Structures are given as C-alpha cells and as structure tokens.
Image (cartoon, rainbow, N blue to C red):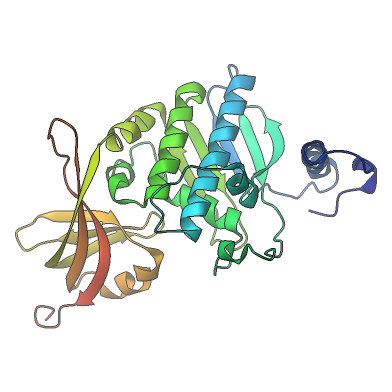
Length: 298
C-alpha cells in the first residue's frame, strides 16, 4: 500500500494508544480509497453475517492477536515451558486491523523494523517478519477443511506454544461461531485457507484437555506412505499395516519428499496424554529424524 496521506495523521501531543488508533483508521481509509488493488494479507470470516455483533468482532480480534503472540514467542524461544503472553509479546508480533466487511475481519502486518539494541533475541532467521511467520504457522496448524480430523488428532504432538494458541482460538469460537482464515502473502505459493468450526473447536478442547504428557522415543522401520505438505503431517505404514502419523518440522520436508514411497528408519517422539483417572489417549507421534533404510529399500 502507498504511504498514508499526511492529512490523515494527527499532530504530535497524542499518546501511543491514540496514535495507534489513528494509524489503523488511516490504513483502512487508504486501503479503501487510495489503492483499489490492495489485497489484505489476512482475512477472517466468521458466523452468520446477519447476526455478528461487536462482542464477536472483539472476541475474535483478541483471540487472533493472542494466538499470534504466543506462536511468535514459541518461534523465538522454542524450548520455553510457559507461554503466558505479556503486552510486550503482543507488541512484538502485532496484527494491524484494517476494518471489517460484513462478517469478515481484515488485517495487515507491520512493516519490518530493525531489532532494537537489547532485543536481538527476538530476531528470527527466515524470509518472513515475526508476525508473518507466526500467522503462517497458525494457518498451517489449523484444519484445512471442516472434515480435516487429522490436523486436530496430532495437536498433542505439536509444540507447546502452538497448543496454547489453538486453545485460545478454540475458546473464542464459542462466541463467534466457526471461522475461515485466508492468508495471502507474495512470498507464499498461492494463498492458504484454514477453518475451525464450532464442532472442531470442541474437538480441539478435548484433544488438549489431558493433564500430563507421557513422552517416549522409539525407532521404527516403515514405508513413508505420504505427507500433507501444506499441513506438515507425515504418514508411515509399518510391515503389519499399522499407520503412524503426526506433525513434522519444515526442516524435514525436503527429505520426506525425496523418500516418499520408500522404506525408511524413523525416529519418533511418542506422546500419550493421561488424565487424573489414569485414562490414556491414543498415541500420536512427532517425526524427529528420518533415514533411508538401504537394506529394506530394494
């Protein structure tokens, strides 16, 4: 989008919060009247257009911002045990509201800024800004369609920050109803769409309701049967026909594409969620390492 007209911006003497409100309003104005070809990079549709209200708009906007901030913190500090967000976390990975249209919320992302002295730990080594990277991760983890149960089944194996973000978003769905998110960035190969219905939000809560994670590692020999690249979910089939699936980090995707349909040796992290009554969930798996099995792959 072109620079905002100076006439839309206030003079000095205003506090930071008021200035932010002016900037957001000015961006929305400029988007509508100054650049008719501009496509907001993030569009979120929800509920029935005839019944959306200010409470729904506010709840969803807040949940999206908090979810983005949590994932951003997880990208920078992947080994952290807690992802309670602070206002400083939100300020580092903000969404820029552009306004609403019917039952849709439109967002942009902040212009990349230099890392301030003393804040070097918040730099990330990717082609995306911190906000872009966090939103991209969020739409990757969310289900692609309303019948995409696999994306929800593997949630216990996702990173803590992702699980916390998904729980925050699922809680908001109780108020807003189901959502559809469209992310459109020039750096992406086309746009990415994700959804989360009210029923899927309930399934998220069930999937993340366990009290304790029992983590073990195991090595299996299997055929790499498939991968959902956009959702980053792998599928292994053992010799007895048992299928194992779960999330995989982006760093392993090139290797997975190369080994598709071949015999492999996989190092997996096995996650079983146990509640206070001792009931255990079905195990889910996270791929840690993948090697071609040269003896079996003939």
